Length: 482
Image (cartoon, rainbow, N blue to C red; front, side, top):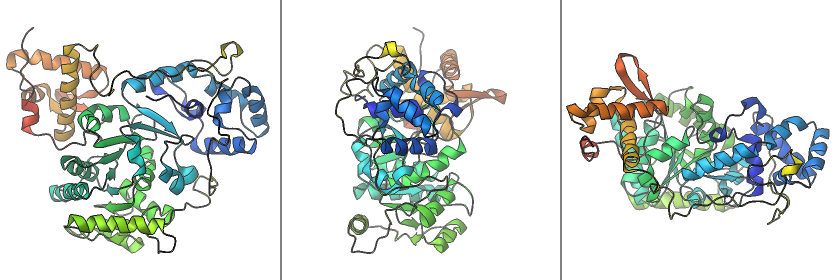
């Protein structure tokens, strides 16, 4: 992990639960609206978040913020989580997860341009961050669709990959994963915007991440559990990271796909929204077209798709041409945040922070102040590679764990005997499979259901590679006694 800027360190302590470093009461954290108002107030007093962990400035700034109706005690408690932040950063580094904030140059400018203050304060990323700047085709749709629509969506992903167009989607079962599977199978690039448990997604997709075909990102803590509102909230990022969007299937007036598409068509208008026009009729897609969505041309020719996307990008950049997408956001969002035309958290450009707190120090303990200590950086060429200190048994377990999780995602709850059959462990060594399952239970990766069946605890999320086949499980040799 690259060294974090002082701004990002401060922002993490203000808004992130830092689950890997301990536990923080959710009510203590600043909401997006509260954080946005804090940033605007800091700008008014010629300050930035980094000043909140500067030993020479913090006292005066907290006193000033209290005059602007900010709770000084609450801010002090948040900024005192230096040790928790240090533990979380070390945990994320071991999993190749980087953190960037709106104050960083690496933060995707297209999010700032289109979403402005609605852009998330933080992004947790695994993969080539530069991919976030390149745009692509967003493909979204329902979780529960028939096999024909899944095949259609995989074909869309393959064609996009052949046209050198990145697929952007949400990683959910059904349409999202089919598009991502089609693109990766064809050697294309994929951005997965994850609503929960980014850590698990990273673990399950090591191969594509290592090969540079996949980037995973999330605006939420990498260990956070699934909640419906998070899945809804990340929809705007899927669109904003794209140049154009295709809705393959949707319910009518319900569900995340519907709500995300309607938000784009009627409110945010970040990208042009298209709907599938071939295949079975869809009441949801017809309703979206009545609201203003376009009809997808259904490209068979790769060059046609390439030219189509190029023309849309050209229109977006040329103010004299009619725009498909209006690169603006409403002046006031639904939660009352005033959106300005331009902003930056780092209102004062300062390459050095000589008085910034070290990771692990408290912003409210004067004796802990001191010069900054650089964050540890990995000595490996790729941190996704197996760590050298792992035993052979641990490396085997990591591989088997990934296969078991994908089996449970693909096939649903399974009994121990069924899992052992897929892994091809011999009948005399089923105890090894039971030990693997116990380790996964203890780690919270799976749960045990009635009738001795097992299922993944994050069943809404799986690998984005092609669907599991018999040849995948046959590569695992039967386990024998040591």
